[in-house]
Length: 425
Image (cartoon, rainbow, N blue to C red; front, side, top):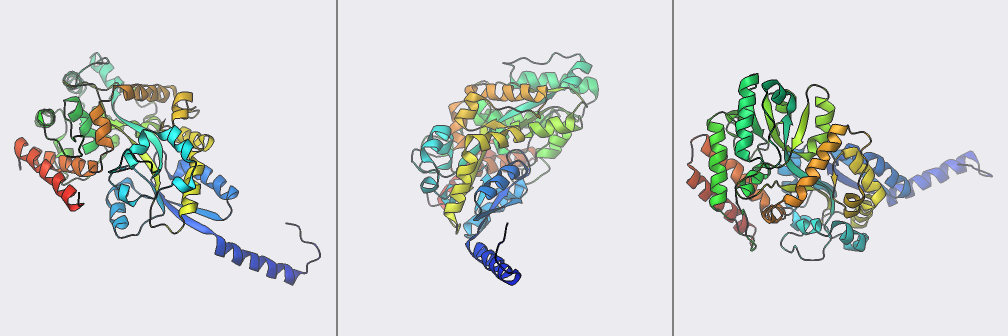
């Protein structure tokens, strides 16, 4: 800054006045995000650029554990508190708190880029026109396989089209031959279990928004319980932790304690970084059930909340991140699947990712066309979280001998119907 014809005192007074004015005008918005994938660390460079180009807005990124986003954020929002914006995954369940961004963003661009996934953010009005956030990335559930263990055991790796039962048989043989603790593990998550359930024919929710308990769901639960009883899966993960507590099991795969780990695409960059050359691995195509070879879609969204005092600043910030250049930069750093149509069609470069990770991304993307309609319907359901929590809780009770399968499924239905009634629907 060049000062001319102004004395030192005058310059100091002017600077002080300018600082006070700037402080008065500055708008600070707080954004909650975790530290994986499309999160605080990968957004930070773009956020800094946004602040430089929008000097009146300050963005405060706060790293929040995923468990807190799932459990604590809804409580804050219910009391009218919490951040101005956040990256969330309970897309339908939190819809009543979202800020409609339509007046503050390029609505035509949002409709072009996110036409299908915007429906997941509209809660009870999926066919409406509200723009309730920016889908960040798509995620796909899937199985990570330790190829080194398969090679050591001399067991062929199942090919695309293999059933869940065939994967269980193959991984049991590998575990036995290599003295590996477990054949298969699945995150303690109703979302992950939903992949298995829908592949067995479960609908989970009907087109009227009511929970569905059917033969497909019962068959999936019985098979899942059987795998725990015979040692294919570890009893102390789904069985030992109570309630709906979410647990991801990446560390077991990293430490070669399991042959197959059913998690998802969001851990790809971590997988590449932490497994490194410890062993060979790959992402397997979706295991097949009697009904389909499907997994669950998912993903996060950057949303603003109605209680914010700076809705225009929130909208301006989200619109900035939705611009293709900025969006691609974050997706590339996150090593995730883009949600924006133009990036899916045009591709995203992942210069920091290994060949193995890029192949894995291709496998995940290849599962998207195979996803059953029930998977998309369940993902956008307002009461998806209630159903997932109920399944997790009740399956654990079956594993612990507290309930039989039929009673557990009846309780799942009751749990979700209670949640719907409590919400006044």
